[in-house]
Amino acid sequence: MLDLIWLVIAVPLVSSGILLLAGRRANAWGHWLGVAASASTFVVGFGAFLQMLGMAGEERSHAVHLYSWIPGGDLQLDAGLLVDPLSLTFVLLVSFVGTLIHVYSVAYMEHDPNRRIFFSYLNLFVAAMLLLVLADSYLLLFVGWEGVGLASYLLIGFWNHKPAYATAAKKAFVVNRIGDIGLILAMGLMLASFGGVDFATVADGVSGASTATLTATGLALLLAACGKSAQFPLQSWLGDAMAGPTPVSALIHAATMVTAGVYLIVRSAPVFEGAPDAQLVVAAVGALTLIMGALIGMAKDDIKKALAASTMSQIGYMMLAAGLGPIGYAFAIFHLVTHGFFKAGMFLGAGSVMHGMNDQVDMRRFGALRAAMVTTWVTFGLGWLAILGVPPFSGFWSKDKIIEAAFVGEGVQPWILGGAALVGAGLTAFYMSRLFFMTFHGKARWTDDQHPHESPALMTVPMIILAVGSAFLGLFLAVGDRFAHWLEPVTGHAEHHDPVMPIWLIMTLTLALVALGVWEAWRRYGAADVPTEAPDVSLATVAARNDFFQDSVNRGVFERPGTHLTRTLVYADAAVIDRAVNGGAQGWPKTGEAVRRAQSGQVRSYAATMVVGLVIVVLIVVLGGL
Picture (cartoon, one colour):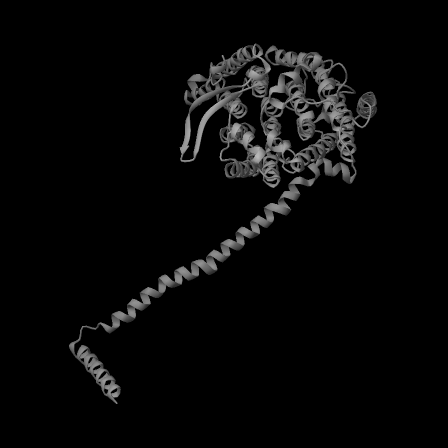
């Protein structure tokens, strides 16, 4: 089955092409072809997983050669796939969660006339993400990287007849292209330093590279990761990406796109372990983003944008863990997996709420939905408990491990990183409880055109399955450090290190902050009346509601200076370069006109000219003889 792993890319890619080319004839069955294609990737991936489980730990790496891709002199690059515990973890997550989202979409997009095209784009998204995580080189990974970017652009702007949605798609596309510059620069440095861009060549060449080269390569990779995973300072696109249909939000935020940056950092572990400064920057960016995302989530009234801010914050936890080195790699991927379940479940739950509330997204217009949407309330509630880190739900086993690991180290670093992770847990409890209570509890704040009702089975069944994973998957993977041992062939064995505080104290403080956040949210949004209009708020809240003015910063620092620079270059081109070229072009006709006048065609004029010339020659000879 390992040799057939290429099918997980080929099948959804071919399905995407069929759905695009078949036209309206596929409207009746195209969505089910999309579901079947996605489900087949899980079947193949699970078969490969079972085969790899039967191998010894040191043998759990299988290369699949596809073809000779770039035979260019000294650079000989083959297109191939690398199947190991890390890539297989992503294959299982993307294919399983992606298939549930496909099933959910059958009902959610039932009345959309372009549902067939929507499923084509979903299949393209899955194929591109699986290529990204299975590639055995940074260059082939880049193909999947760009494919994910293209698919996200198409899906975010799927309803592009609305100008705001089309703008959101373009914004996501442009911001991610900035991050792509980092990956291109990193590959250039790898090619110059190591002579290749495949993972094996890079890993072998790290020992002979200078710290400066590895640091520059690591920072370039971090720039790429920040773009895809919406980390500071390239996080501005994530909230606007909610413009797409809700299943798209679930796919982007849970199983695909935003997890790609975390994968890139962990896959590039040899580079970062040789560049401790770059590794520290990764952890610092993660810590900053997890706090920033939490503060933004506290101020959002749009249920999908609040969840988007939550994703930014939770990916920040993963980046923080990845920046901790060997002690954090497994925890970063562990939290990525559990987050894939509870965040997908909550996004689908948000879609279910929108389905029952006439597409309303303002939580101030919700309230008391638990009675009308019991299944959605229960499944969303399990995801809520999981992201809070309440034992024994999944987030407790993954996020708390990151908090403990952040407190490992010497000097001030563990106090800063660990403190950020600890505070983030309390903020997460507040903003997620705010979202949960404003939506499902308190008094009903519906409008007359809203008649809440539960969603159909095609939507609720995927939510139930994801809720079960939110509740129990973390515990299953944590028992006996099962998940960490599974990843050891890739991430290496992490030696035990004691944090600067006892683990029991860290756990107690974390749960206390979580309880405090839940209580404060209940006091404000569960027990008290919630105004249907946002009240006047402080400057800090205004800043958080506006994503800390990131768009304004981008416009002021990049867009406007770029516009002025462009206008200056256009003026210089017209006033200097064009004038010089056009002036020269206009001068030649004038020169020709002057020469033409000397050619009159009259014999007497030519004779007079010859006489004048003869006189000049004689004078030269006579004067020269003197």
